[in-house]
Amino acid sequence: MNVHLKPIHEIRMTRPDDGIAPGKPLLVVDNISLAFGGVKAITNISFDILKGEIRAIIGPNGAGKTSMLNVINGFYHPQEGTITFRGEKRSRMRPHVAAHQGIARTFQNIALFKGMSVLDNIMTGRITLQNRNLFWQALWRGPAEQEELEHREAVEHIIDFLEIEHIRKTPVGRLPYGLQKRVELGRALAAEPSLLLLDEPMAGMNLEEKEDMSRFILDVNQQFGTTIALIEHDMGVVMDLSDRVVVLDYGRKIGDGTPDEVRNNQDVIDAYLGVSHDE
Amino acid sequence: MLYREAGDFKTTYSLDQQTFPIRSERWLFWLFIAFAFLVVPFLINDYWNKAVLMPLLIYCMAALGLNILVGYCGQVSLGTGGFMAVGAFAAYKLMTSFPGMDMFSVTILSGVITAAVGVLFGLPSLRIKGFYLAVATLASQFFLVWMFNKFAWFYNYSASGQITAPERTIFGYAVTGPNTLPWATYLFSLTIVFVFAWVARNLTRGRLGRSWMAIRDMDIAAEIIGVSPLRAKLSAFAVSSFYIGMAGAMFFANYLGAAEVTEAFGIDKSFLVLFMVIIGGLGSILGSFLGAGFLVLLPVLLKNIMVNQLGWPTDLAAHIQIMLIGGLIVFFLIVEPHGLAQLWRITKEKLRLWPFPY
Image 1: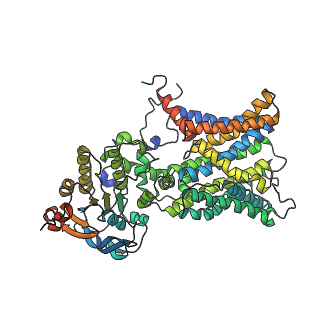
Image 2: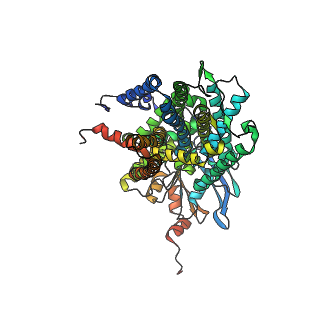
């Protein structure tokens, strides 16, 4: 059925290029602070994500990593600081606006649409790229169907890429955990994001599934040129995959740099292993 | 031999995502539609029209509308009766203010007016969910009925407070008023239901439908992938009320002929349509039809068996009928909580392999 698929670079023409040269900052987080009442989740954090890189955000539990992602895609609004995405400083915005600007994400606890099939879930990921109005959708025949088929073809590419052809019509609620994680990645990829946020993509997976997922993440980064920010607890994975790592602890940044730099940073070692109080 | 997908290969995506992917199923569907359009009008009499077919078509329409809101978008509504009243009164005002307007336009415009009212009462859904939203829509039910009773302008200051449909014709045949022919009202309603069921199918399988289902299944994730909750929820309220308004217009103009708001569009209508949607299957177009069919046809069938066949007294039959239907609703919900549509889906799965399941 997939013999006559167009090559992938022809499909990926729907979203205009973000206009940032590789290696230049795609997203700059400047002095962000976020508090819930008296609880300070994030304090004065600054870092940047360069176009084309894989940026890892690590830290012990409760360090503020997921809060940081929530700030980036507009789900939380920080009390202080600015976020610059694609060279534009951003004011308060709703998550769906961030999605339209090209930020996609997966969740720590899978957040798929349980009642829908794999195909529909991934098609939903392309919602920001579809724009036929109510009238054409009601009519179906003609422009709406044509648009639907174009997007279906793009989605089939993603299904091929993630090797989930056999389950495309299965309701996602029936799938095992590892496959659900893969479908969620597919849904995020379907939006053709310039920045992909992955919140613990390998949590709860066995070694084989982790290897598969790592391969997918590297392929997404290299084939599609997508910039990726990921949160992950498996240090082996983080050190192997990422170009640069930012380390958070108790809502503060305690380290930033290449995996090697971070590995030898005393603050990071202390945060992970604890400090001895004897001396 | 009836239900086989062997040899039915899909070579394009457009073939793969059609409504009835299996050839025999497609044939059955079109045979059924042809029967409904070409054969039934010649067989129909006044009893079948008034007792069976018209209520069936009208409740199918209302159930379709409510299913879009509750089943597809996950917003619980108990305001169906009120919205049907809006449709009915809109139709009445349109018919009396613009005598030249044809009935198709009247029905569709009544739907449009109801859609606007629906959006208004859908605004609370942006802040509240679940049971709390149900209570908010319940308020709309009582408010709308009160409003149509209170302001005499809505019923043109008639002494009885009733609204009565004047006669309107389509191609010279009366579809409203006292001189209607059974087959004319039937064909009129069937056409509207058929066209808008097709529209509902189109809306639910495309971008809009997916944005509704995304909001239903996981609203936070939906927002993060780019669905605007405001647009998704309000469009669901609008489309749903559009259908319910048209059902209300047909209920008043083509079926009842004259209506009094408290009696015709009370809270019991809201519950009845909600039960149809739940029993038929949430989030399924077919389910809307099955649910409406179940709750409209079963009482007629039971009454016929008990009164006409067994010769029981009418009041005894009426009581037993209520108990039987209540019992059957509970039975079906226990056997298949996802409704009759799911039952049909499972049957189809089994039929694929029948008679050799291994």
